[in-house]
Length: 596
Ligand SMILES: [Zn+2]
Image 1 (cartoon, protein in one colour):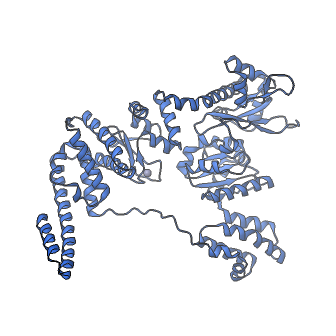
Image 2: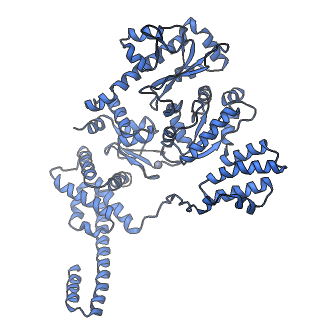
Image 3: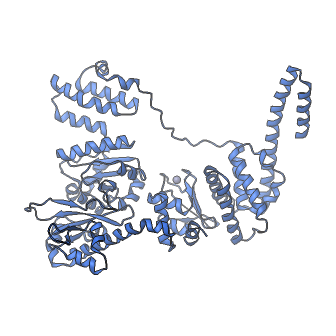
Protein backbone atom coordinates (compact mmCIF):
# COMPACT_ATOMS: atom_id res chain seq x y z
CA UNK A 1 0.00 0.00 0.00
CA UNK A 2 1.25 3.50 -0.82
CA UNK A 3 2.05 5.69 2.21
CA UNK A 4 -0.75 8.09 1.35
CA UNK A 5 -3.29 5.25 1.30
CA UNK A 6 -1.82 3.83 4.49
CA UNK A 7 -2.19 7.20 6.20
CA UNK A 8 -5.74 7.62 4.90
CA UNK A 9 -6.71 4.19 6.21
CA UNK A 10 -5.42 5.10 9.68
CA UNK A 11 -6.91 8.56 10.02
CA UNK A 12 -10.67 8.70 9.80
CA UNK A 13 -11.62 11.87 7.99
CA UNK A 14 -14.54 12.60 10.30
CA UNK A 15 -12.27 12.45 13.37
CA UNK A 16 -9.67 14.60 11.64
CA UNK A 17 -12.11 17.30 10.56
CA UNK A 18 -13.76 17.06 13.97
CA UNK A 19 -10.53 18.31 15.56
CA UNK A 20 -11.06 21.60 13.77
CA UNK A 21 -14.81 22.00 13.29
CA UNK A 22 -17.97 21.40 15.27
CA UNK A 23 -19.55 18.59 13.30
CA UNK A 24 -23.24 17.78 13.43
CA UNK A 25 -24.68 14.48 12.17
CA UNK A 26 -26.33 14.88 8.78
CA UNK A 27 -27.66 11.33 8.34
CA UNK A 28 -26.24 8.25 6.65
CA UNK A 29 -22.82 8.54 8.26
CA UNK A 30 -22.18 12.05 7.03
CA UNK A 31 -21.68 15.20 9.06
CA UNK A 32 -21.99 18.90 8.42
CA UNK A 33 -20.52 22.13 9.73
CA UNK A 34 -20.18 25.76 8.80
CA UNK A 35 -17.39 25.94 6.26
CA UNK A 36 -14.05 27.24 7.57
CA UNK A 37 -13.06 28.35 4.09
CA UNK A 38 -15.81 30.85 3.38
CA UNK A 39 -18.20 32.96 5.44
CA UNK A 40 -21.58 31.33 6.07
CA UNK A 41 -24.28 30.96 8.67
CA UNK A 42 -25.92 27.71 7.57
CA UNK A 43 -23.70 24.65 7.15
CA UNK A 44 -22.83 23.62 3.62
CA UNK A 45 -19.62 21.82 4.53
CA UNK A 46 -20.14 18.02 4.45
CA UNK A 47 -17.84 15.18 5.40
CA UNK A 48 -18.60 11.51 4.84
CA UNK A 49 -17.45 8.62 7.03
CA UNK A 50 -18.18 5.95 4.43
CA UNK A 51 -16.56 7.84 1.56
CA UNK A 52 -13.74 9.45 3.56
CA UNK A 53 -14.05 12.72 1.67
CA UNK A 54 -15.34 16.24 2.36
CA UNK A 55 -16.93 18.91 0.24
CA UNK A 56 -18.37 22.39 0.71
CA UNK A 57 -21.42 23.04 -1.44
CA UNK A 58 -21.02 26.77 -0.74
CA UNK A 59 -17.54 27.51 -2.01
CA UNK A 60 -16.79 24.29 -3.87
CA UNK A 61 -13.71 23.28 -1.87
CA UNK A 62 -13.33 19.58 -1.21
CA UNK A 63 -11.11 16.53 -1.19
CA UNK A 64 -9.55 14.03 1.17
CA UNK A 65 -7.53 14.15 4.40
CA UNK A 66 -4.49 15.70 2.70
CA UNK A 67 -6.44 18.44 1.00
CA UNK A 68 -8.19 19.32 4.24
CA UNK A 69 -4.94 19.66 6.19
CA UNK A 70 -3.25 21.59 3.40
CA UNK A 71 -6.13 24.02 3.33
CA UNK A 72 -6.81 24.47 7.02
CA UNK A 73 -3.19 24.41 8.23
CA UNK A 74 -1.95 26.34 5.22
CA UNK A 75 0.60 23.64 4.39
CA UNK A 76 1.91 22.48 1.07
CA UNK A 77 1.61 18.80 0.18
CA UNK A 78 4.97 17.59 1.60
CA UNK A 79 4.24 19.39 4.87
CA UNK A 80 0.77 17.87 5.08
CA UNK A 81 2.21 14.45 4.26
CA UNK A 82 4.73 14.69 7.11
CA UNK A 83 2.09 16.10 9.45
CA UNK A 84 -0.39 13.29 8.80
CA UNK A 85 2.30 10.60 8.71
CA UNK A 86 3.36 11.64 12.23
CA UNK A 87 -0.25 11.60 13.33
CA UNK A 88 -0.90 8.17 11.84
CA UNK A 89 2.42 6.70 12.99
CA UNK A 90 3.34 5.86 9.41
CA UNK A 91 7.03 5.87 8.50
CA UNK A 92 7.74 7.76 5.32
CA UNK A 93 10.28 6.26 2.92
CA UNK A 94 13.93 6.91 3.60
CA UNK A 95 14.49 9.61 0.96
CA UNK A 96 11.75 11.71 2.55
CA UNK A 97 13.18 11.21 6.04
CA UNK A 98 16.80 11.88 5.18
CA UNK A 99 15.93 15.20 3.66
CA UNK A 100 14.19 16.23 6.84
CA UNK A 101 16.55 14.29 9.14
CA UNK A 102 19.06 17.00 9.94
CA UNK A 103 16.40 19.71 10.04
CA UNK A 104 14.54 17.46 12.45
CA UNK A 105 17.58 17.26 14.71
CA UNK A 106 17.99 21.04 14.76
CA UNK A 107 14.29 21.44 15.59
CA UNK A 108 14.68 18.94 18.45
CA UNK A 109 17.60 20.91 19.86
CA UNK A 110 15.67 24.17 19.70
CA UNK A 111 12.64 22.54 21.31
CA UNK A 112 14.79 21.32 24.20
CA UNK A 113 16.37 24.74 24.59
CA UNK A 114 12.93 26.38 24.67
CA UNK A 115 11.83 23.97 27.40
CA UNK A 116 15.03 24.59 29.34
CA UNK A 117 14.68 28.39 29.22
CA UNK A 118 11.00 28.13 30.10
CA UNK A 119 11.73 26.05 33.19
CA UNK A 120 14.43 28.48 34.27
CA UNK A 121 11.98 31.37 33.93
CA UNK A 122 9.33 29.62 36.00
CA UNK A 123 11.50 28.13 38.73
CA UNK A 124 14.99 29.55 38.97
CA UNK A 125 16.10 32.08 41.53
CA UNK A 126 18.19 33.67 38.76
CA UNK A 127 15.00 34.59 36.87
CA UNK A 128 13.54 36.68 39.68
CA UNK A 129 13.99 39.92 37.74
CA UNK A 130 12.52 38.46 34.58
CA UNK A 131 9.42 37.30 36.44
CA UNK A 132 8.99 40.74 37.96
CA UNK A 133 9.36 42.32 34.56
CA UNK A 134 6.61 40.11 33.10
CA UNK A 135 4.36 40.86 36.02
CA UNK A 136 4.88 44.55 35.47
CA UNK A 137 3.91 44.07 31.81
CA UNK A 138 0.71 42.32 32.97
CA UNK A 139 1.60 39.03 31.33
CA UNK A 140 -0.48 36.19 32.72
CA UNK A 141 0.91 32.73 33.44
CA UNK A 142 -1.18 31.46 30.53
CA UNK A 143 0.51 33.81 28.08
CA UNK A 144 3.92 32.83 29.39
CA UNK A 145 3.01 29.16 28.86
CA UNK A 146 1.30 29.61 25.49
CA UNK A 147 4.24 31.45 24.01
CA UNK A 148 6.76 29.34 25.99
CA UNK A 149 8.58 32.44 27.20
CA UNK A 150 11.84 31.68 28.92
CA UNK A 151 14.91 33.09 30.56
CA UNK A 152 18.55 32.57 29.63
CA UNK A 153 20.57 32.87 32.83
CA UNK A 154 23.77 34.83 33.14
CA UNK A 155 26.11 31.95 32.32
CA UNK A 156 28.53 30.97 29.59
CA UNK A 157 27.71 27.31 29.34
CA UNK A 158 24.63 26.26 31.24
CA UNK A 159 22.59 25.58 28.07
CA UNK A 160 25.57 24.05 26.30
CA UNK A 161 26.16 21.61 29.15
CA UNK A 162 22.47 20.79 29.41
CA UNK A 163 22.22 19.92 25.71
CA UNK A 164 25.49 17.96 25.75
CA UNK A 165 24.15 15.91 28.62
CA UNK A 166 21.10 15.18 26.45
CA UNK A 167 23.46 13.65 23.92
CA UNK A 168 23.86 16.37 21.32
CA UNK A 169 27.19 17.26 19.77
CA UNK A 170 28.58 20.81 20.02
CA UNK A 171 28.68 21.06 16.24
CA UNK A 172 24.92 20.39 16.00
CA UNK A 173 24.08 22.78 18.84
CA UNK A 174 26.09 25.39 16.99
CA UNK A 175 24.18 24.64 13.77
CA UNK A 176 20.97 25.16 15.75
CA UNK A 177 22.14 28.72 16.45
CA UNK A 178 22.30 28.42 20.24
CA UNK A 179 26.03 28.73 20.90
CA UNK A 180 28.94 30.77 19.57
CA UNK A 181 32.52 29.74 18.82
CA UNK A 182 35.06 31.10 21.27
CA UNK A 183 37.30 33.74 19.74
CA UNK A 184 40.35 32.40 21.50
CA UNK A 185 41.05 28.74 21.99
CA UNK A 186 38.64 26.01 21.03
CA UNK A 187 35.09 25.37 22.13
CA UNK A 188 31.84 27.25 22.33
CA UNK A 189 29.78 29.33 24.76
CA UNK A 190 26.07 30.12 25.12
CA UNK A 191 24.87 32.74 22.66
CA UNK A 192 22.03 34.05 24.86
CA UNK A 193 22.82 35.22 28.40
CA UNK A 194 20.75 37.17 30.90
CA UNK A 195 17.91 37.66 28.46
CA UNK A 196 14.18 37.10 28.25
CA UNK A 197 13.66 34.44 25.59
CA UNK A 198 10.87 34.43 22.96
CA UNK A 199 10.88 31.19 20.98
CA UNK A 200 10.17 31.79 17.31
CA UNK A 201 8.02 29.02 15.92
CA UNK A 202 7.31 27.74 12.47
CA UNK A 203 3.81 27.46 11.09
CA UNK A 204 3.27 24.21 13.02
CA UNK A 205 4.33 25.73 16.31
CA UNK A 206 7.79 24.15 16.49
CA UNK A 207 10.57 26.34 17.89
CA UNK A 208 13.15 27.13 15.21
CA UNK A 209 14.91 30.08 16.80
CA UNK A 210 14.74 32.79 19.44
CA UNK A 211 14.42 36.50 19.93
CA UNK A 212 16.20 37.48 23.13
CA UNK A 213 15.49 40.68 25.00
CA UNK A 214 17.85 42.33 27.43
CA UNK A 215 16.20 43.23 30.73
CA UNK A 216 18.91 45.52 32.06
CA UNK A 217 18.22 48.86 30.38
CA UNK A 218 21.62 50.20 31.52
CA UNK A 219 23.62 47.58 29.65
CA UNK A 220 25.52 48.56 26.53
CA UNK A 221 24.66 45.49 24.48
CA UNK A 222 21.90 45.39 21.86
CA UNK A 223 18.42 45.33 23.40
CA UNK A 224 17.30 42.53 21.08
CA UNK A 225 19.32 39.76 19.51
CA UNK A 226 18.09 36.94 17.31
CA UNK A 227 19.15 33.47 16.34
CA UNK A 228 21.42 33.89 13.30
CA UNK A 229 20.35 32.34 10.02
CA UNK A 230 20.44 28.54 10.29
CA UNK A 231 19.21 25.60 8.24
CA UNK A 232 15.82 25.93 9.90
CA UNK A 233 15.58 29.64 10.71
CA UNK A 234 15.53 32.54 8.33
CA UNK A 235 14.33 35.79 9.82
CA UNK A 236 12.60 36.88 6.65
CA UNK A 237 10.60 33.66 6.34
CA UNK A 238 8.65 33.82 9.59
CA UNK A 239 5.98 35.93 11.18
CA UNK A 240 6.03 35.82 14.97
CA UNK A 241 2.91 34.16 16.36
CA UNK A 242 1.47 33.02 13.03
CA UNK A 243 1.11 29.41 14.22
CA UNK A 244 -1.20 30.62 16.98
CA UNK A 245 -2.90 33.28 14.86
CA UNK A 246 -3.62 31.35 11.68
CA UNK A 247 -7.06 30.03 12.62
CA UNK A 248 -8.26 33.45 13.77
CA UNK A 249 -6.77 35.04 10.66
CA UNK A 250 -8.79 32.65 8.53
CA UNK A 251 -11.96 33.20 10.53
CA UNK A 252 -11.73 37.00 10.49
CA UNK A 253 -10.23 37.07 7.00
CA UNK A 254 -7.74 39.65 8.25
CA UNK A 255 -4.18 39.58 9.54
CA UNK A 256 -2.94 42.37 11.79
CA UNK A 257 0.80 42.99 11.64
CA UNK A 258 2.41 44.72 14.60
CA UNK A 259 6.02 45.49 15.38
CA UNK A 260 6.80 43.82 18.66
CA UNK A 261 6.56 40.30 20.00
CA UNK A 262 5.12 41.71 23.20
CA UNK A 263 2.27 43.34 21.23
CA UNK A 264 1.40 39.93 19.82
CA UNK A 265 1.40 38.20 23.19
CA UNK A 266 -0.67 40.90 24.88
CA UNK A 267 -3.18 40.94 22.05
CA UNK A 268 -3.59 37.15 22.17
CA UNK A 269 -4.00 37.39 25.93
CA UNK A 270 -7.12 39.55 25.50
CA UNK A 271 -8.55 37.27 22.82
CA UNK A 272 -7.60 39.27 19.72
CA UNK A 273 -5.72 36.45 18.05
CA UNK A 274 -5.36 37.40 14.38
CA UNK A 275 -2.20 39.31 15.24
CA UNK A 276 1.43 38.59 14.27
CA UNK A 277 4.70 40.51 14.39
CA UNK A 278 7.14 41.13 11.59
CA UNK A 279 9.96 41.75 14.11
CA UNK A 280 10.44 45.32 13.00
CA UNK A 281 11.43 44.54 9.44
CA UNK A 282 9.48 45.30 6.31
CA UNK A 283 7.55 42.38 4.86
CA UNK A 284 9.36 40.00 2.55
CA UNK A 285 8.00 38.10 -0.39
CA UNK A 286 8.12 34.86 1.59
CA UNK A 287 6.12 36.39 4.42
CA UNK A 288 3.53 37.62 1.93
CA UNK A 289 3.32 34.10 0.54
CA UNK A 290 2.64 32.82 4.07
CA UNK A 291 -0.05 35.44 4.65
CA UNK A 292 -1.78 34.59 1.39
CA UNK A 293 -2.34 31.04 2.55
CA UNK A 294 -4.81 32.42 5.08
CA UNK A 295 -6.17 35.77 3.93
CA UNK A 296 -5.75 38.54 1.39
CA UNK A 297 -6.43 41.33 3.87
CA UNK A 298 -3.64 42.81 5.94
CA UNK A 299 -3.72 45.67 8.44
CA UNK A 300 -0.54 47.32 9.71
CA UNK A 301 -0.11 48.80 13.16
CA UNK A 302 3.43 50.06 13.61
CA UNK A 303 4.87 52.46 16.15
CA UNK A 304 4.34 56.14 15.45
CA UNK A 305 8.08 56.89 15.63
CA UNK A 306 9.88 57.51 12.37
CA UNK A 307 11.61 54.12 12.24
CA UNK A 308 8.25 52.42 12.67
CA UNK A 309 6.63 54.56 10.01
CA UNK A 310 9.40 53.91 7.51
CA UNK A 311 9.21 50.17 8.09
CA UNK A 312 5.44 50.30 7.73
CA UNK A 313 5.63 52.24 4.46
CA UNK A 314 7.95 49.58 3.04
CA UNK A 315 5.66 46.85 4.32
CA UNK A 316 2.65 48.52 2.71
CA UNK A 317 4.44 48.75 -0.64
CA UNK A 318 5.44 45.09 -0.46
CA UNK A 319 1.91 44.04 0.49
CA UNK A 320 0.33 46.10 -2.29
CA UNK A 321 2.83 44.64 -4.73
CA UNK A 322 1.79 41.19 -3.52
CA UNK A 323 -1.83 42.00 -4.38
CA UNK A 324 -3.02 42.14 -0.79
CA UNK A 325 -5.72 44.54 0.40
CA UNK A 326 -3.97 46.83 2.83
CA UNK A 327 -5.23 48.99 5.65
CA UNK A 328 -3.68 50.85 8.57
CA UNK A 329 -4.61 50.87 12.24
CA UNK A 330 -4.18 54.21 14.00
CA UNK A 331 -3.66 54.23 17.75
CA UNK A 332 -4.89 57.32 19.56
CA UNK A 333 -2.65 58.32 22.45
CA UNK A 334 -0.72 55.06 22.71
CA UNK A 335 2.68 54.22 21.36
CA UNK A 336 1.95 50.57 20.64
CA UNK A 337 -0.82 47.95 20.98
CA UNK A 338 0.69 46.64 24.23
CA UNK A 339 0.29 50.04 25.89
CA UNK A 340 -3.22 50.50 24.55
CA UNK A 341 -4.38 47.03 25.64
CA UNK A 342 -3.02 47.56 29.12
CA UNK A 343 -5.08 50.73 29.32
CA UNK A 344 -8.25 49.08 27.96
CA UNK A 345 -8.47 46.01 25.69
CA UNK A 346 -11.69 47.33 24.11
CA UNK A 347 -9.74 50.28 22.69
CA UNK A 348 -7.55 47.88 20.73
CA UNK A 349 -10.49 45.98 19.22
CA UNK A 350 -12.08 49.27 18.29
CA UNK A 351 -8.87 50.56 16.70
CA UNK A 352 -8.81 47.43 14.51
CA UNK A 353 -12.47 47.85 13.57
CA UNK A 354 -11.87 51.48 12.60
CA UNK A 355 -8.78 50.78 10.50
CA UNK A 356 -8.49 52.98 7.45
CA UNK A 357 -7.45 52.43 3.86
CA UNK A 358 -3.88 53.10 2.82
CA UNK A 359 -4.70 56.23 0.82
CA UNK A 360 -6.75 57.68 3.65
CA UNK A 361 -3.76 57.08 5.88
CA UNK A 362 -1.34 58.77 3.50
CA UNK A 363 -3.67 61.75 3.23
CA UNK A 364 -3.85 62.02 7.02
CA UNK A 365 -0.06 61.96 7.27
CA UNK A 366 0.27 64.70 4.66
CA UNK A 367 -2.38 66.84 6.32
CA UNK A 368 -0.48 66.86 9.57
CA UNK A 369 2.88 67.31 7.87
CA UNK A 370 2.34 70.35 5.61
CA UNK A 371 0.64 73.69 5.74
CA UNK A 372 -1.69 73.28 2.80
CA UNK A 373 -2.58 76.96 2.62
CA UNK A 374 0.86 77.76 1.23
CA UNK A 375 1.99 77.11 -2.32
CA UNK A 376 5.02 75.19 -1.07
CA UNK A 377 2.84 72.97 1.12
CA UNK A 378 0.51 72.21 -1.79
CA UNK A 379 3.42 71.35 -4.03
CA UNK A 380 5.00 68.98 -1.48
CA UNK A 381 1.67 67.33 -0.77
CA UNK A 382 1.01 66.65 -4.46
CA UNK A 383 4.53 65.44 -4.99
CA UNK A 384 4.24 62.88 -2.22
CA UNK A 385 0.68 61.75 -2.82
CA UNK A 386 0.57 61.49 -6.60
CA UNK A 387 3.07 58.60 -6.81
CA UNK A 388 1.03 56.70 -4.22
CA UNK A 389 -2.18 57.29 -6.17
CA UNK A 390 -0.45 56.07 -9.30
CA UNK A 391 0.37 52.78 -7.59
CA UNK A 392 -3.34 51.98 -7.28
CA UNK A 393 -4.26 49.32 -9.77
CA UNK A 394 -7.93 50.16 -9.94
CA UNK A 395 -8.73 53.06 -12.31
CA UNK A 396 -11.90 54.04 -10.49
CA UNK A 397 -10.06 54.19 -7.19
CA UNK A 398 -7.33 56.21 -8.83
CA UNK A 399 -9.81 58.75 -10.18
CA UNK A 400 -11.41 59.02 -6.75
CA UNK A 401 -8.16 59.90 -5.03
CA UNK A 402 -7.10 62.36 -7.70
CA UNK A 403 -10.37 64.13 -6.95
CA UNK A 404 -9.60 64.05 -3.23
CA UNK A 405 -6.13 65.43 -3.78
CA UNK A 406 -7.50 68.20 -5.97
CA UNK A 407 -9.82 69.21 -3.14
CA UNK A 408 -7.06 68.93 -0.56
CA UNK A 409 -4.65 71.25 -2.33
CA UNK A 410 -7.44 73.29 -3.91
CA UNK A 411 -6.40 73.04 -7.55
CA UNK A 412 -8.46 71.67 -10.42
CA UNK A 413 -8.31 67.96 -11.29
CA UNK A 414 -7.33 69.04 -14.78
CA UNK A 415 -4.12 70.60 -13.49
CA UNK A 416 -3.30 67.50 -11.41
CA UNK A 417 -3.96 65.16 -14.34
CA UNK A 418 -1.68 67.20 -16.56
CA UNK A 419 1.09 66.77 -14.03
CA UNK A 420 0.69 62.97 -14.08
CA UNK A 421 3.31 61.05 -15.96
CA UNK A 422 2.06 59.70 -19.28
CA UNK A 423 2.69 56.05 -18.58
CA UNK A 424 -0.28 55.44 -16.39
CA UNK A 425 -2.93 56.56 -18.86
CA UNK A 426 -1.25 54.47 -21.54
CA UNK A 427 -1.22 51.37 -19.39
CA UNK A 428 -3.71 48.71 -20.41
CA UNK A 429 -6.95 48.78 -18.47
CA UNK A 430 -6.90 46.43 -15.56
CA UNK A 431 -8.70 43.21 -16.17
CA UNK A 432 -10.91 42.66 -13.17
CA UNK A 433 -10.40 39.24 -11.79
CA UNK A 434 -13.80 37.68 -12.39
CA UNK A 435 -15.51 37.17 -9.10
CA UNK A 436 -17.39 34.04 -9.89
CA UNK A 437 -21.09 34.58 -9.40
CA UNK A 438 -22.74 31.22 -8.83
CA UNK A 439 -24.23 30.19 -12.15
CA UNK A 440 -27.67 28.64 -12.05
CA UNK A 441 -27.43 25.13 -13.42
CA UNK A 442 -29.52 24.39 -16.50
CA UNK A 443 -32.38 21.90 -16.26
CA UNK A 444 -30.34 19.29 -18.13
CA UNK A 445 -27.35 19.75 -15.91
CA UNK A 446 -29.54 19.38 -12.86
CA UNK A 447 -30.74 16.07 -14.24
CA UNK A 448 -27.18 14.80 -14.76
CA UNK A 449 -26.22 15.90 -11.29
CA UNK A 450 -29.07 13.70 -10.02
CA UNK A 451 -28.16 10.82 -12.28
CA UNK A 452 -24.51 10.62 -11.27
CA UNK A 453 -25.03 11.39 -7.59
CA UNK A 454 -27.60 8.59 -7.33
CA UNK A 455 -25.46 6.04 -9.15
CA UNK A 456 -22.39 6.63 -6.99
CA UNK A 457 -24.44 6.04 -3.86
CA UNK A 458 -26.63 3.21 -5.17
CA UNK A 459 -24.39 1.17 -7.43
CA UNK A 460 -27.03 -1.56 -7.39
CA UNK A 461 -29.11 0.71 -9.65
CA UNK A 462 -26.41 0.97 -12.31
CA UNK A 463 -27.84 -1.92 -14.41
CA UNK A 464 -31.16 -0.04 -14.58
CA UNK A 465 -29.71 2.84 -16.57
CA UNK A 466 -26.63 1.35 -18.13
CA UNK A 467 -28.47 -0.28 -21.01
CA UNK A 468 -30.84 2.65 -21.55
CA UNK A 469 -28.40 5.51 -21.38
CA UNK A 470 -25.43 5.57 -23.71
CA UNK A 471 -22.71 7.89 -22.33
CA UNK A 472 -22.63 9.76 -25.65
CA UNK A 473 -26.18 10.98 -25.00
CA UNK A 474 -24.95 13.13 -22.13
CA UNK A 475 -23.95 16.31 -23.89
CA UNK A 476 -21.79 17.81 -21.17
CA UNK A 477 -18.30 16.41 -21.32
CA UNK A 478 -17.51 16.32 -17.61
CA UNK A 479 -20.74 14.53 -16.66
CA UNK A 480 -20.35 12.21 -19.62
CA UNK A 481 -16.84 11.22 -18.51
CA UNK A 482 -17.79 10.69 -14.89
CA UNK A 483 -20.81 8.60 -15.90
CA UNK A 484 -18.71 6.53 -18.29
CA UNK A 485 -16.10 5.87 -15.61
CA UNK A 486 -18.75 4.70 -13.16
CA UNK A 487 -20.11 2.22 -15.72
CA UNK A 488 -16.61 1.02 -16.62
CA UNK A 489 -15.57 0.50 -13.04
CA UNK A 490 -18.83 -1.19 -12.13
CA UNK A 491 -18.42 -3.70 -14.94
CA UNK A 492 -14.82 -4.42 -13.99
CA UNK A 493 -15.68 -4.87 -10.33
CA UNK A 494 -18.90 -6.77 -10.89
CA UNK A 495 -17.74 -9.54 -8.59
CA UNK A 496 -18.64 -7.18 -5.77
CA UNK A 497 -22.25 -7.16 -4.78
CA UNK A 498 -22.40 -3.71 -3.29
CA UNK A 499 -25.46 -4.13 -1.11
CA UNK A 500 -24.05 -4.07 2.38
CA UNK A 501 -22.82 -0.78 3.81
CA UNK A 502 -19.28 -2.03 4.29
CA UNK A 503 -19.10 -3.27 0.74
CA UNK A 504 -20.57 -0.04 -0.50
CA UNK A 505 -17.84 1.99 1.09
CA UNK A 506 -15.28 -0.43 -0.34
CA UNK A 507 -16.94 -0.01 -3.73
CA UNK A 508 -16.70 3.73 -3.32
CA UNK A 509 -13.00 3.84 -2.44
CA UNK A 510 -12.24 1.63 -5.43
CA UNK A 511 -14.37 3.79 -7.69
CA UNK A 512 -12.81 6.95 -6.30
CA UNK A 513 -9.33 5.67 -7.13
CA UNK A 514 -10.45 4.56 -10.59
CA UNK A 515 -11.94 7.97 -11.38
CA UNK A 516 -8.86 9.75 -10.05
CA UNK A 517 -6.63 7.68 -12.28
CA UNK A 518 -8.78 7.94 -15.36
CA UNK A 519 -9.86 11.54 -15.48
CA UNK A 520 -8.47 15.00 -14.99
CA UNK A 521 -8.47 16.81 -11.69
CA UNK A 522 -11.59 18.85 -12.42
CA UNK A 523 -13.59 15.74 -13.20
CA UNK A 524 -12.38 13.97 -10.09
CA UNK A 525 -13.45 16.97 -8.02
CA UNK A 526 -16.86 16.93 -9.69
CA UNK A 527 -17.11 13.22 -8.92
CA UNK A 528 -16.40 13.75 -5.21
CA UNK A 529 -18.79 16.66 -5.02
CA UNK A 530 -21.57 14.55 -6.59
CA UNK A 531 -20.76 11.65 -4.28
CA UNK A 532 -21.33 13.79 -1.19
CA UNK A 533 -24.31 15.52 -2.72
CA UNK A 534 -25.93 12.14 -3.29
CA UNK A 535 -25.21 11.08 0.26
CA UNK A 536 -26.81 14.29 1.48
CA UNK A 537 -29.88 14.25 -0.75
CA UNK A 538 -30.76 10.62 -1.50
CA UNK A 539 -30.01 8.63 1.62
CA UNK A 540 -33.66 8.75 2.77
CA UNK A 541 -35.17 7.90 -0.59
CA UNK A 542 -35.89 4.26 -1.44
CA UNK A 543 -34.59 2.46 -4.48
CA UNK A 544 -37.97 2.20 -6.24
CA UNK A 545 -38.39 5.92 -6.33
CA UNK A 546 -34.80 6.46 -7.40
CA UNK A 547 -35.20 3.89 -10.15
CA UNK A 548 -38.18 5.83 -11.52
CA UNK A 549 -36.13 9.01 -11.34
CA UNK A 550 -33.24 7.40 -13.20
CA UNK A 551 -35.50 6.09 -15.98
CA UNK A 552 -36.96 9.55 -16.48
CA UNK A 553 -33.53 11.12 -16.66
CA UNK A 554 -32.33 8.48 -19.10
CA UNK A 555 -35.35 9.07 -21.37
CA UNK A 556 -35.04 12.83 -21.15
CA UNK A 557 -31.32 12.69 -21.97
CA UNK A 558 -31.86 10.41 -24.93
CA UNK A 559 -34.63 12.65 -26.35
CA UNK A 560 -32.47 15.70 -25.92
CA UNK A 561 -29.59 14.05 -27.72
CA UNK A 562 -31.75 12.83 -30.60
CA UNK A 563 -33.48 16.18 -30.97
CA UNK A 564 -30.10 17.89 -31.28
CA UNK A 565 -28.91 15.31 -33.78
CA UNK A 566 -32.06 15.81 -35.85
CA UNK A 567 -31.48 19.55 -35.92
CA UNK A 568 -27.92 19.04 -37.07
CA UNK A 569 -28.99 16.56 -39.75
CA UNK A 570 -31.83 18.82 -40.96
CA UNK A 571 -29.40 21.63 -41.47
CA UNK A 572 -26.93 19.37 -43.27
CA UNK A 573 -29.77 18.03 -45.42
CA UNK A 574 -30.81 21.51 -46.46
CA UNK A 575 -27.25 22.34 -47.43
CA UNK A 576 -26.85 19.11 -49.38
CA UNK A 577 -30.10 19.80 -51.28
CA UNK A 578 -28.98 23.33 -52.06
CA UNK A 579 -25.79 21.92 -53.54
CA UNK A 580 -27.82 19.26 -55.34
CA UNK A 581 -25.71 16.52 -53.72
CA UNK A 582 -28.00 13.47 -53.98
CA UNK A 583 -25.59 10.96 -52.42
CA UNK A 584 -24.97 13.09 -49.38
CA UNK A 585 -28.73 13.63 -48.96
CA UNK A 586 -29.28 9.86 -49.04
CA UNK A 587 -26.63 9.27 -46.37
CA UNK A 588 -28.18 11.88 -44.14
CA UNK A 589 -31.61 10.35 -44.55
CA UNK A 590 -30.22 6.99 -43.46
CA UNK A 591 -28.73 8.55 -40.35
CA UNK A 592 -32.09 10.14 -39.68
CA UNK A 593 -33.81 6.78 -39.73
CA UNK A 594 -31.18 5.24 -37.47
CA UNK A 595 -32.02 7.80 -34.83
CA UNK A 596 -35.55 6.46 -34.37
ZN1 LIG B 1 -17.03 26.67 1.87
